[in-house]
Length: 329
Image 1: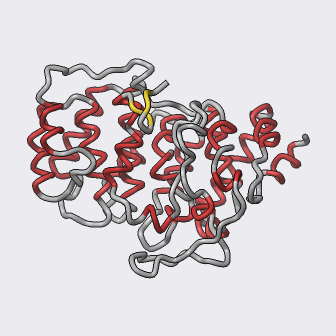
Image 2: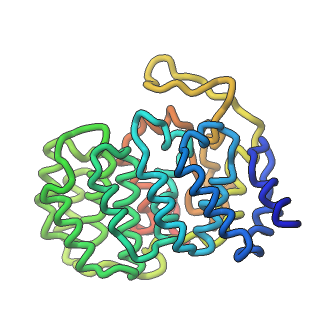
Image 3: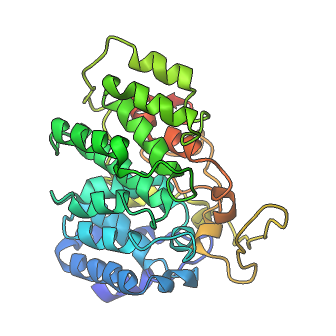
């Protein structure tokens, strides 16, 4: 396929069809296509409303392909894009469950060594909570991959717990606090357990993520060295096709969104389904390929009603050795 053919094939969502050949061809044209994929992300970073189209898929392919390429030039662009996310502009909704399921991993894949913009998002109280939480998880991934000094990450986490992350219980910091608790656990920062337990008491962390009793028990264990084996590290993206091809929007007919009249605070169009709406439910473990660690799952209205704790628990299963109920492999 010619380069322009590949780009054309990746532009629009076609219900029940995944352009595997075009994605594979894109991967073979890495040098040629990388500037075009970066330009796609720059375009939506300049105007995030383009993602509200619902069928404009090229930026999603760009995210996964650039992650596969380990392209560091994507790092500042991705952070600029998602750093604009708020509860009001629906940017998180318009990208499906990408933020809760894969943003942290994609960021780890394209890390360029500059943590300043990442930390700025984490402490931005106006930014969407799901993006802030993903950035904290990305920091943990980068550290466990030994791409950033553990001591510096621990110092950053300590400052966040000491006041850099606001302690008020709001819609903009719930997932950030939950992800912070996960960071303390995963990085074996047992000396800060009391601070996290106080956050539990203040209602900042949902106990369904991990009960305060279990958290205290884990932090009271004799283990003080973090595990950096392959089973415990972040499972990086190596094959965009394997990551994306089993999304239900590619394997099932179009399902239009239905507004939950009783609980949804936002309205999802029933006439023009978004990418978020179409990436509906995660395939069962029996049908999901082992190479696809996580696949964007529930629709936007569903994601907005589930708690941050369940999300973080799923996203950090590579640390505990669990993978949707099975052992990581």
